Image (cartoon, rainbow, N blue to C red; front, side, top):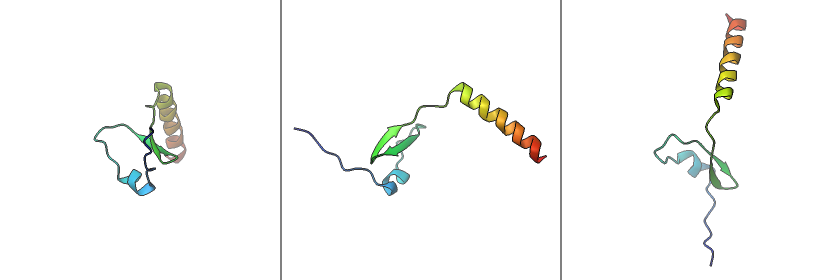
Length: 57
């Protein structure tokens, strides 16, 4: 016997808070935990930010 769950709506997703810092995405009505950002990704973002700030200032 399988238990079917009702898919989560956009409104339910936007109001969802599990009390942690975990980020989720909504995939076909189900929550999917998103992986944390890698160190390389963070370094690239910082380098891009520094580059764009040089263009503006």
